[in-house]
Length: 364
Image 1 (cartoon, rainbow, N blue to C red):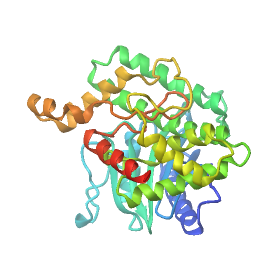
Image 2: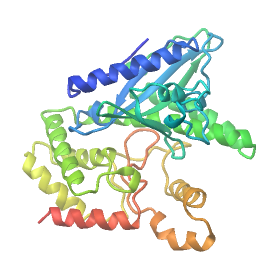
Image 3: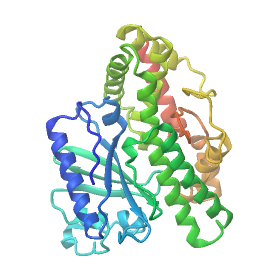
């Protein structure tokens, strides 16, 4: 079953590309006798803050029951071999033969710029079709044989959070035995699924909060303008430590909620005034933090940054010390819901200086 939460802001070409991707994923899943697939648009497509060159952020949710014959039960069946990028066109794609979705896409000549990003908190497959860029994450939800499968798209905030808490319970069990080599990868997979569902739920929460009076239109227009400004000033790329769509969504929606019934011009002025003067020792958030096992905390953020620094960046203790200031917590912009996520996680010392300079220039 396909569930596509399409939005009116998706133009016809993008809608065609999305339908092509959904049908391709469905064909791949059917080879393993898995038929219940949801393709959930999230990010700018869900919030309708997309501009002409926006990516399509989406989550593929595969729902299955125990012993239902579906052969997909772990995330690596989506990503394939996590240690190698096997999509080598010069070899006719013959090396990509592990039956993963990644290899299936690799052999599709309509799919371009295919890569997997599995060394970050939220694991995704990235590719483009025509001129549309896709960033897709994956979630597997398993129910007992006597339970009904409910589409995530039809669940409310509390029901999605209940699903997340079930993943969190599995995480707690694995954490008790995290010293076992096989559990390390399972922990990362569960965390990736939690972050994917939390991001989707956060966007729905923001839609619910802003959907009063004419605030929705104000939010969307201001966000699009600010996003275009950030791109034009080369400070829009979350992977490289600059603004991303999630960060701008939270920054704008906070102002719209504070200054409701204000004009577009006033909101734009307040954006540059507020965040050029913001004391970034304080978090930007839309509500109080939750108090659960995987809720956001300063301590967990510091640990995550240091783990990333040691594993993927610093090659020696001296280099770690030299780079440490780039991996301090410099900007915290929390998405609402459980668990909260700092969508400015990648901002470092250098990029923060550049962002601050552009914000200061914007107020002039």
